[in-house]
Image 1 (cartoon, rainbow, N blue to C red):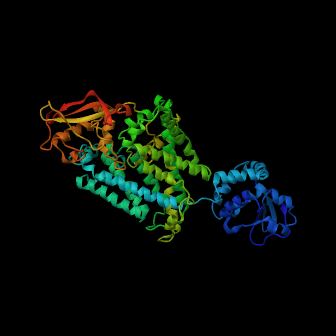
Image 2: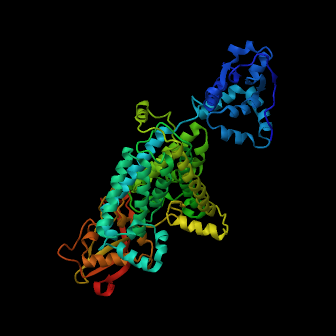
Image 3: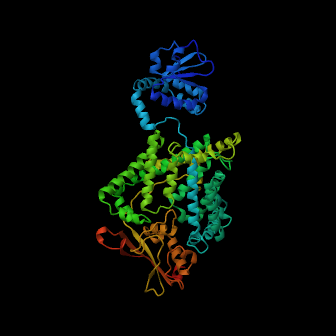
Length: 625
């Protein structure tokens, strides 16, 4: 390891603190001095040589112009890279990291010629600094983005719980499509005591309809407390537990990537603020909160870049030739009416847009660790992509949640001063030593385990597969049960056709009437509607069922049985019931292929469709048992 070397001694050193002397007429120097002052605080004095240079006759005038000079109270003199590498010894914040960095073999030896090169080209590097970092080179603070992120996360939780509360009985209630109580009774008998960590949920205690609905509304209430900023760490822990419980109970209906993303985001966010504060001081930040922030940024990196990598790894020709968007707008699960217009755009625009997706998903994530201006540009690009996706489709709270993660890239500087004043309204004092110790003791193993296992899906996409020792495999299975360390990647293979299931009922087996859904395509004259951020779970699941054989989606048979029984809870999931006087004797599922109409079709219809056959033959209560 190379250590900073002395340049010499001065006869009249400063008596109390080291003095770093710089060129006060150099903009580039002033930028870096501001950054170093943040690191050392009041432990080092900083003065331009134009003011104090004459006090040190041992230092030539040209030496001040070429490099910074560090004079220590014992008279020792360091200059250039050696002076800079001495500063971590006087750091009041971040010194441990910089000292560790300084200890890397050969780093200082390489830094000396690099410092001389930069010093001799300061106007150019001053321009580069201004271009990449902006007007200030001070260490950025992310206090307001943390405050805002947690409130947006609370809003996302609120949306998720309320959206599910109005559907859950039809999905997994006693008379729902996949009753939760039956599932837990069967799973408990098969799994025994291991059920508690294989299927972690509060519904082992009670899976009644009242409890299912009560958990949803309890989650909504706690979400409101999180938005209000009341004991956020406790709220986040409870919200994570309740939503995990609902994901286990609802199974396929809560098995989407954004459900997994909400659980992972919510779990990591628990550590973003001190654990024992009911009213945290948002204008303060601890080492633990910085670690948690980087874990959340690592999540933002993974979900973005994995979405791009899976498209490449799939070798799907629609992505390879940039024609994916010519299919996407009409084949996505629940298009918005704006998707009809986007589908009419010329091929060259569709290809440019597709190329832009690759640029953002594969390039912008790396800007997370880039200088300030590039980081902000990357955040803007990723937020813009999410806004574009939301503008043409109903992707529930996914775009809002992903955008919330990107908010953590925005430092305090861009926000209006009036907005940031909210941070001045603080409550309890900053946590004491005990709170910091507990926070760190809990976060350290979480950070290590989460970082390791979250790398595995990324390595798998890249083709790096490895047989891990049995203990690691077992630990991974245990962690996987909590759905808080996941792999991501949307639309790896583009769906090029849109099969659509039409559910029909009949009283005589001859005349069939369709059940109309509230959001998925059915009536070709019905304009695609906005339902996001609410997610109609049954409508979404019908899209997946249309791509598979009924045997792959056994819930479809249960759905047909509930229609034959006339279950009020299931019927409430639909827009209309063509059999208001009593359930039909028969139910079937027919398959059509849907396409958006075109401008040149000169029709009032939004869709055109072609009959493809029977997906689920007519069933009655007698034949469905």
